Amino acid sequence: MKIFVVNCGSSSLKYQLIDMETEGVLAKGLCERIGIEGSKLTHTPTGKDKFVLETPMPSHKDAIKLVLDALTDKDHGVISNTDEITAIGHRVLHGGNTYTESILIDDDVKKVIRECFDLGPLHNPANLIGIEACEAAMPGKPNVAVFDTAFGMAMDEKAYLYAIPYSYYEKYKIRRYGFHGTSHSFVSKEAIKFGELDPKTAKVIVCHLGNGASISASIGGKCVDTTMGITPLEGLIMGTRSGDIDPAVIQFICNHEGIDVNEMLNILNKKSGILGMSGGVSSDFRDVGKAADEGNHKAKVALEAFEYRVAKYIGAYTAAMNGVDAIAFTAGVGENDKAVRKSICENYLGYLGVKIDDEANDVRGKKRVISAADSKVKVMLIPTNEELAIARETLEIVNK
Ligand code: ADP
Image (cartoon, rainbow, N blue to C red):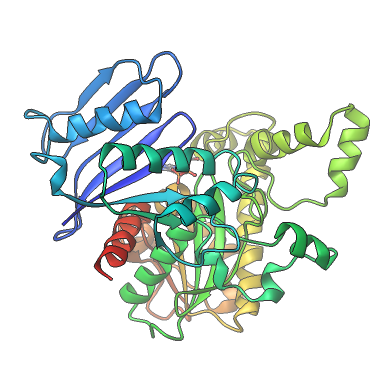
């Protein structure tokens, strides 16, 4: 059984072909600049040389065709033909209020993905294009949609409703959806298994700390709350996103700078976060860390504020669940930055009985318990793997 995992952006297409017997990656790759001059395919077959092809890709259909050619090529291919692919799993950003789990794609599903274009204006149209390109290239093959919002659909009304007139929820489905759902679901389940916790009752907080960052609270793998909202802008301070702010700031800046709400939202999404707070140093945590070490005060405060907000949400989510059994760190910063993990745990979580084992915490990108044996809460590093999560979901749906 081989599952082809596809993640389409507006001008990009990331893919992996995964052998589900071993859950090993047979090949992975990326098409960049689709529809723009300078299109490029980078195909990396496991155990063979990387293959790079610079050729025009006017559409995602062209990109898919080149990817399938690369996968079946006699030199850098990993399968003899596409019949070996059992199904295709698509990362889809927004399933709106309709889908609480992954689903086999048919016309109704595509209609809902289309209806959610205004909730996910950058991703949903690209996701649908990717689905249609795969349908055209491999007719009759099952395609499965794995929604980034599905995990958050388990939240209670008290967690997902905003305190604004109820009619907006009824009219426009305005609510907290949450994103990174595939990662939060995968990491919380892995944490339960790896930490040998009770699969039904374990209270887990997952800190997905990357360029985009979010935290979730879940009990027995079911989402109780999560920091991102109707869009990924809410919650933590991120690489370029502000996270939580008083909405009145928007009105104030718009009035004083003579800009409109759309421009302001662009600033909050793309020019804020640690990039904005550091005075423009970088959106990359490594660069901001380096600047802080070299004495840049704004960079230092940006990182402190990032950690402070993570800690505040861990406190809030411990209250939301009336306890916490495990805290799992994941994604670029969570998996690689031992100083951030240590600082969050030691500066803010002592009251929970959290104790970090420095030797265990000296690790990157490997599944490991990083708390001391007498820590009251298990703290873990659990690498996320959204592609594998999508492949597992896809296989489960086609096996049903
Ligand atoms: P996304 O998928 O949201 O783009 P990632 O999960 O890939 O983000 O995380 C990217 C972030 O991880 C970058 O800001 C990068 O600086 C950070 N990162 C990667 N490696 C390290 C490291 N060794 N130390 C600190 N931060 C790191």
